[in-house]
Length: 142
Image (cartoon, rainbow, N blue to C red):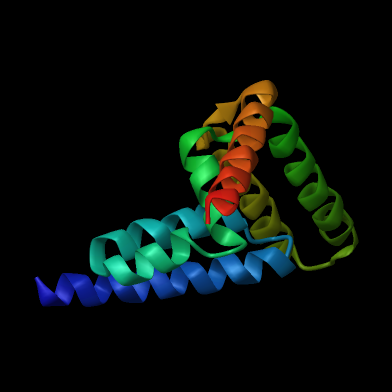
């Protein structure tokens, strides 16, 4: 039992580090790693899970994607950006191994995006507006 908690916690930190790196590096998908970190922290440490879910930047993103998913526009724009950044490298490199690696990476990213639930854009906007109203109401009460 303790070993599994340690392994889940280590996995959570690994996924979190990869998710943070994915914010900067276009070849890494941020969202799936953050979702993986949330899952691992949920299994290992309630305190770390709450910290991640209440994080100023990561928490709202994880909650929205877990509940509603990504819109088709978000999926396409993210994938198009990654594709546009990697395509010149694939074309210009002379290394066959690097080309194969990058093509496989693009395929894996496409598979991950297909697996993430696709939200309707109107539902996400309504949910965001509703969440902002709720936060405004909570601050007024205090």
